[in-house]
Length: 112
Image (tube, rainbow, N blue to C red; front, side, top):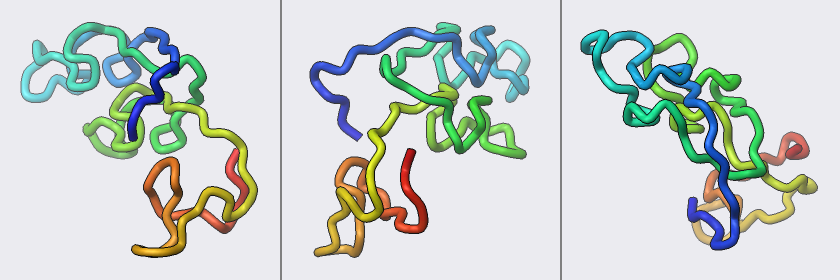
């Protein structure tokens, strides 16, 4: 996903390492740096963001020691605008794809 030119960002505490700068599971050692923030203890995220539904804000892939593949370990994602069913979906070429994210369209419920 490409970052919008005028989108402002804020710095928050890294969710994956909980602000320690170290790998929260000590893999491969307890001195290993966090893979989400590279040891900086903080990450830059879009100013308008919401809790990641993929990891519930923890930054970890559920039931594993991996960073969340949705938010990259940050615990939050850019807030998408509320849309109606099928709005913003391309149906030509490779099937129904969301124009903003490039992922398959969700037509079972309304995005919030």
